[in-house]
Image 1: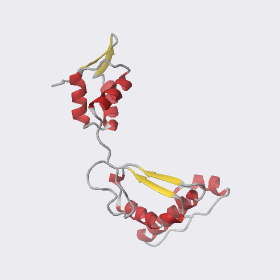
Image 2: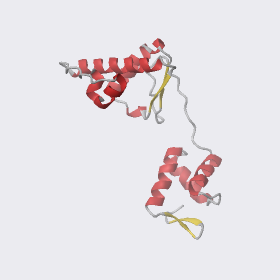
Image 3: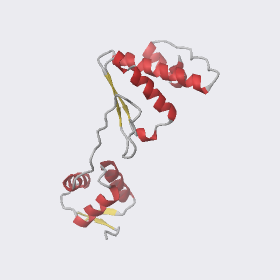
Length: 173
């Protein structure tokens, strides 16, 4: 019933019938506790049907309530085959508060990896070395940033394909 307040359209498909939302609690803290318990119960139930990988992206943006939820989930994780995966940018370890967490830092793209990514995105193997170096510098080799930067440059008209070659209007020095 607590989740029905947030996801009423899913109640009928999951439960096969209309469900009455839970009443509001007196405090936000009580409401958060009930919501966390409901979410944990749902995830554990889903996990009992063959296991579950629960992905939490951009965990570096997690608010205190989300951190509390993950701590509750972590305490009960042995009740079902459940793996929680969080992604976060470099900086303070986003999983420091979790005793079962293991960090797996991902390295930046190598020069060869960056070349392959840019070549695949632009559909050519012929790339200016200075252009690649500038892309590497601006993105720190982060594949997500490489993709977004190239998309931005193309959409802004600063990177154009002319006569079968990619040309840019940005300074490379």
